[in-house]
Image (cartoon, rainbow, N blue to C red):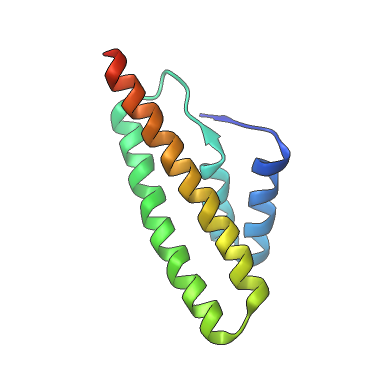
Length: 102
């Protein structure tokens, strides 16, 4: 796994750390770019873990909304969007790899 260095990907763990250190670890994982050496099984496992975290973040968004904490809600929404983008990116790479017969 190779981590991307850039404004968008570097900011995510910082936002997440302010919310919860455990979420920051997930945010760092979602910033990963999959190399060609990663097996389909590893990619599937990562996608599954990201989907589970996506659901947890959804519930945390609801909790923050019910508590009236708009700042936390918006930060969690950013985290949810980033996780969703990474799920799509991983799924696309998996599909394109299957089409190429690798």
